[in-house]
Image (cartoon, rainbow, N blue to C red; front, side, top):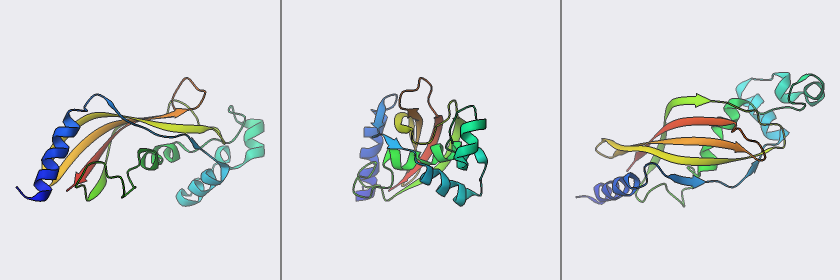
Length: 161
């Protein structure tokens, strides 16, 4: 076996042993108005409930601006640590590709200046090509002090060796 084939086989065995378990719990991240505004600018979603603090304080049921749901979803990547080259998801992984979502819900809002963290449970792993593993994880974005999470997503990623 080549080095990449050995790395893939080792990663597959290691990940299969973790299916059904929590594989990562992130640090807390504060969701600032600056981050919300930057996301609004990047996506052209400038709804007042996100960017107009005065109007949100008086008219929104949340009493303050809230983060976009898709902002909360997008934070899965840094909360999971998938972009840290110094700490790959598994030894030998050259690339992590976002393959998609099986399910996505936003059961709670994230008010400006709230803190969220990501909780990740490995749901499945399989080899889908000679140098590719596919993993499915449940990402739950918890809001500090809230009983309901802001986001629950079943995400599918491909690990290229």
